[in-house]
Structure formats: C-alpha cells, structure tokens
Length: 318
Image (cartoon, rainbow, N blue to C red; front, side):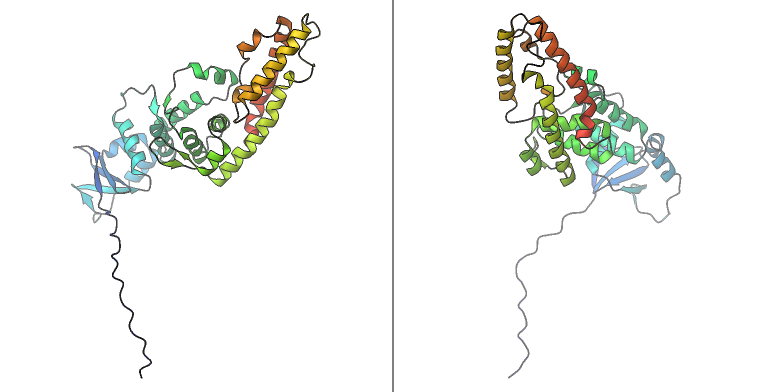
C-alpha cells in the first residue's frame, strides 16, 4: 500500500481578473505639449514651460536631461508623480485657465492647490488656497463675527462631509491657524458619534477622521462646554442680572430664567458655538431693562473675547 498522499485537486473557482493598469489619456491633452505627466493611471500632455514657470521643483527636475531610452508617448517623455490624478486634473485646469471666474472655487480645487502647491512649490496656487482658507476661517474675532454676511470664497459649505474633509486637509497640510474654527464647525454640525463612525458625503462616500483627530475633537468639546458655562454664567445667580441699579428686578429675574431655559433647550443635543463666540442675541434685549441688558452684554463681550483667545488651546494648539 502506497504511503504517498493523493494529489490535491486544483481549485476550479475563477480568480478575479487583475485591474486594468493601462494608462488613460486625460482631457487635458495640449496639442503642443512636450511632456507627459502621469498620476496614477492617468496621463496629461502638458507644456514643461508651464510647469517650470510655476514650480521651482519642476524647474529643477526638468532642467536635468532625461535618459534617451526612457519611454515616450507621441514623442513626449513621461514624468510620473505619486499624487492623485484628480488633484492634478484640478490644478492643471487652474493653471491652463487662469482667467476663469475664481471668486469662489470648489473645495476640491482649493485642496488640490494647497496640497500640490505646497509639495511642488507652486506659490501662486498655495497662496490662493491659503487666502481663501484664512478668509473663511480667520484668526480675528471681528472677522469671524461678520463671516456669515460675506460671500464665500470656497464653494461647498452646504455639502455633507465638508467640515470633516476640511479638517483632514488642514491637519494634513499643517494649517494650524484655521483648525480651531474649522473644528468648531465640525462640532457644531455633527455629534461625536457621527464624527467617530464616519460622515457620509453628498456623493455617498464616507469621510473619516484619524484616531488622533477624533481624540482632539472629543477633548476640545469637553473644554468648550466647560468654558461655555462661564460665558452664560450671568444667567445663574444675581451677580450680573438683576443689576444693582435695576428698577424692575423681579421682571428681569423672571426673564433671565426664561432666557436660561431657551439656551438650555437649544444646546441640549449639540454644541452651539453662538454661545461661545457669538455676539449678543438681540432677542434677549427686549426681555431685560436697559441697565440689565448693558450689564449682560458687557459680561458676554468679555467672555467671548476670552473664549476666542483660548480657542486654539481647546484643540491642543498654542
């Protein structure tokens, strides 16, 4: 009797076919282009002068002659980059169409300009992106207060998943000055549960934050809520309202309790930054006498200014 084990039968299940890695020609294919830029599996025929003129990195790279045996496409040498094809498509579209209406750019375009502008030293692209981010998420309290009344320079604020995407970009590119207000928008727009499990974008895909960024938001939320209590402290006790010069203390005390209930109801499920950094709510003015209103306003203004100064520290920034 033979001790040789029987040969194993070959599996008959079909293996899935390998993905097609054949390069695809982009719509950005300049007839007089003299170089092929390949990102992922997408090729762009562009002009080396355009790249060199805008980017010191490409100027240095393209100043070195390519080996004669390098593969070409339509006689043009291929330069491969490790970025996404979508980012390059968006950036090249900006470089080749500089006079298009740019009052408000889509967020994806701003992100591509910031990423590639930083990586390849394209000052015009990077500075344009930074100016838009600083315009929308300023480091000045007065600019923050009037931001809702201005025309936006980044088109996408109403899209689901925008703020987590924005926060990821800011951390990725090290734009610390915009992180506090962008993080505040995240906490205003979503619960921690949603931010931890992932937020669905308008196109059905999901955006997630890194574990480190999730922890940062959780800690920031706790710090903000704790500080926010001090901003609204004038609603508790009698230190601010009724004021010692109030001539209708019973009425102002009663109305203060009503305002307190309104605030508690509005903030019971999610952070509302209007009570941390917002201006005085004009609807409260009609409920208090002039003296108490002024006292409460002054207390609120001082608290909001302090909150603004502390906001970066809530997110672990200096």
